[in-house]
Length: 149
Image (cartoon, rainbow, N blue to C red; front, top):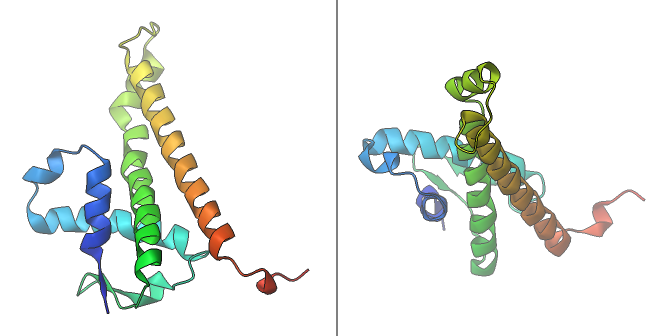
């Protein structure tokens, strides 16, 4: 049974407040969030017990795999968290924020530097949560016999 990309996208969209996605044409929105999905899957694939990269079918927008329901919920949650990380990354490297930070001397509570710092902290927290979720998954589902000790 194929697992639709929409399952991951729905979980991702439930975790963020991005109103710009609502006004985007469906195809543009799909291209954007599918990019987040692919990058998150690549990061997670090395420890996932299912080979999501090989099973991806971009034409059908699904993974051609049979994933147990208990595993599916956990995998969707982890990958959608990775999608949040991918969504946040461009906010950190936004040129106008960096220019304002580098050219401003006064760092007030509402300064661009403060905004950039808070976005950076949000990114670090999301990345940390995602990394911890992948670690927890690998501890729960890992096979120690594969280790060469």
